[in-house]
Amino acid sequence: MADYEDEQTRASHFPAEDYAAESMAADMDPWVVFDARKTPRAEFEDWLDTYRPSRVLRQGNPNNNMQPIGWIAVYGPDFTPEAGRVSELQDDWEQLQASSRKIDFDTVRELALNHGVLSGKWLMHLDTGFKVDHAWRQVAACVLEGRAGLAKVSPFSSDSDKHVICVYNCNFTDEEKVMELDAAIRAAGIKCQLSYKPDVYTYLGIYRNNRWHLCPTIYESKFDLECIPRRSRIINKVNNMEVN
Image (tube, rainbow, N blue to C red; front, side):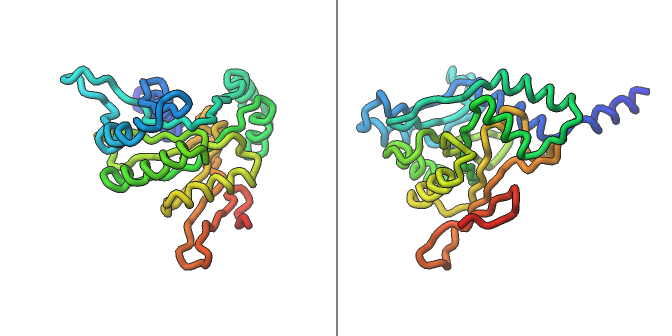
């Protein structure tokens, strides 16, 4: 009987739920933040050197009285936090799942619009060490110059040799603005593959390998080194069409 129950539990559990729990834990732990709205720019380079992602420990260090660090972030000079009505969104999400209504991108988009949860981010996954430290410096400078409102990077974790950098904009439903943010990231010197994820997916626990079989990102950007002038080739993953 116990073995049967264990099998049932595994069958009803999806990896996306573990990723969501990890993300929530990181959000709740303290962040290291450079806030360009109130911190002098003269301190920026020293801050970057002090808090290189590859050298900041996610778990902290009890021997040195260092607490866990969730994220390292830069707030731009015009950054204004706008989360929307997240608790109401999640309540309606529970009701949607209990209904017989189909769950797809359009229904989630509708929920996001109804509750003003419209922000999203371009994501990049990079190896620890020089690669992530260098890319983070470029992205953080982009935010400091006001070309993006907020960016964050995960610190080093003993569980992974990868970091994620997130660069935010305020409206995932405005394709033109999403493309403008991609262009700003590319202009900062970033050439790796990018994926774009609406924050509504994060709040609802929609990560890869989720129970609703939704792709957790809605755009994919690959930098075309052979194209003149060089530019991103971006695919809308909802309709599998290239964005021009």
